[in-house]
Image (cartoon, rainbow over all chains, first blue to last red; front, side, top):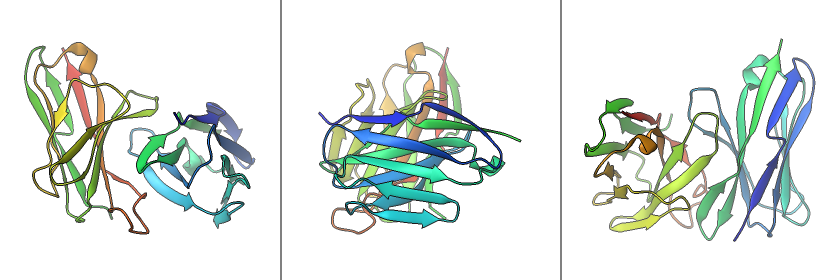
Length: 109
Length: 116
């Protein structure tokens, strides 16, 4: 079945630095979503990517869908303490959403 | 603001008890989901529903059961709670097939269950 790998599992970032988290699939995806879960909170939808090579931006966050629609990335510039949390990519398998293991982000002031 | 509610928020219960975790949404969403998540870990789908009278098991085997008698309500029941059931249970909903937002899940605040 479809497998989704997220790397890295943990990311320690100095405030002000940039970082990227990746999501890789063994199969071609119809679409991919990204969610953020703050410590002690519940996942919150960030964005959905559908088209090959699609790039979407939300302020300091840049989301990209690979040309082959098998991978995706989330790049955050000028990290702030509010970026702390776990970022999940979510893939669609026959209408059933599958969460990746997540990248847990810790920001050092 | 998403309108999806879960009760109770916290539950501590003894082994062998029957419990029902409640989940309700007021958005008219067709799809609803139950996830299990241990602290700092990934979410595991345990049940989902595409509409009234539709329920399916998810990827993670679970001893719980669900029902979907009304669109807005998707309760999860454990007939006999055990310490291994200690976890956080998250309910979510999303629009139905064909809706442009069908993959956007709205999550409830979760129920933290502890079985002694």
